[in-house]
Every structure is written in C-alpha cells, then in structure tokens.
Amino acid sequence: MKHPINIVKYSGDVVAFDVDKLINSLRRSQTSEELIQQIVAQVQDKLYDGITTKKIYQMAFKMLKGKSRVSASKYKLKKALMELGPSGFPFEKLVGKLLEHEGFSTQVGVIVQGNCVQHEIDVIAQKDNKHYMIECKHHSDQGRFCNVKIPLYIHSRFLDVEKQWEYQKGHEAKLHKGGVYTNTRFTTDAIQYGKCVELLLTSWDYPTGNGLKDRIDKLGLHPLTALTTLTKAEKTKLLDEGIVLCKELHEKPVLLEKIGIDKKRYKKILEDSEALCKSN
Image (cartoon, rainbow, N blue to C red):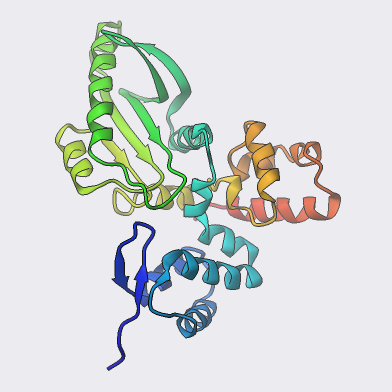
C-alpha cells in the first residue's frame, strides 16, 4: 500500500493529500474532464511530502492557463477575491453588485445613525419588505478566517441600527436583518452564533451550494482580478477607477485605452471578460 503524501494547508495544518479535492476545484473551471485528468496526473507526479496547497494550486493553475485562459480565470476565483484589496472597498462593491443582480437596491459605504452612535455600513440592501445591513470582511490570505468575535460585533451594531430603523415610518412591516460577507471562511463558533441570532452569513463556500463561489459563477459576476490577461499594476489602476467586475469592464472598454492597453491585448482582454460574464 502506497504511503499517503502529507500536504501543508494555508492555515499551517498538515493533512493527507486528497485527489478528489483537486479534481473538484478543477471542475469549477468548467474545462474538459480529459484535461482535468491530465493535470491531476501531472500534479500527482510532482507531489512530495510537505508540499504546500499553494504550490499544488500554482502547478495546476499554470497547466490550465497553458490550455485555456478563461478556465484558468474561473479556477483562480478564490485568489481573485483576495486580490480585491488591500482596502477591502472593491470587495464591498462586489457584494453590492451581487445583491443588485439578485434584485436588491443597494447602497455601498453609508453612514447611518444608530440609536446610540453613528455607524459606517458597508452595504445596505433592500427588496420588497427585506431591509439588510451587511458588513464585509475581506482577507488577503487564505489562512485567516472570521471567528466568533466578528458576528458578535456585527450583531451588536445591527441591533443599534435596527432600533433606529424601527422608529422610521413604513418600517413596521419590514424584515430587518444584519449580515456578514467574507471572502474566506467562518469558524464553527461564528456559524453557530450567527445562526442563533439569525444573521445572514455568507463566505467562500457557506451556505453550502449558495456561497460566494456559487453565486459568482451562477451570475457571471467574476471580479476583473480573475483575468489572466491583465498585469497586477493594470488591475490596480482599474480598481482605482471604481471598476470591480469583468462585466463592467466589458461595458466600459474605453477604460482599457485610458490605462494604456495596446490594441492587440485589448482584444484578448475583452474576449476573456465577455466569456467570464456568461452566467452558468
């Protein structure tokens, strides 16, 4: 029997390599099963005890990018969300756009008077009788999770704002809820507390089947940081212009000229952004 290969996760935990996890992550790229099996075989040939998950991801990404830029962009979604930094404001905008495409009217970065003090709310979302106050927690590395302190703090802020909302005319029948969106994960305690006080919790893969990765894929709302045809400096320039999604880039191609992209690359970038805009 072959000895299992131990790998080191972003958190520092050591676990046995699980080929199914690699296969499932590659399936998110929507490439062919044939290519997935080829990449898996090549990665397995290069594994060694103590290899990091980061190194495995880099190998798989490089192989995928060599065959299909768009598939590579879909595969790097988790990393692309981490690149929406360092201020975290582009992540707030992405969450606002996500809720907008799900039928909510949204405001991003709003100062609201609570019952006791003022609060800066990342996203306020309204639809029908639903009125939500969303806090966005953006992390630039995968090893950082949202622990129970975050929902505890957000819930206390929400209660202060809710008290004030309830005084407003027309709010008697509204369903007020607080929520936390993060691009990484929640700890078990954070989820337990959030459920208990009925906070809306959304992370990379929570709730199961309806986390950020599922909703972004479903709606075709990939961040422009997923594009493999742009340099890091170019992505930063576009984020500074207030553009967060590939979809927005496709709607405002003039911005590519503004940041100095030449004609040859311009066409490639727009082709890739259009392909990523297609919802599943």
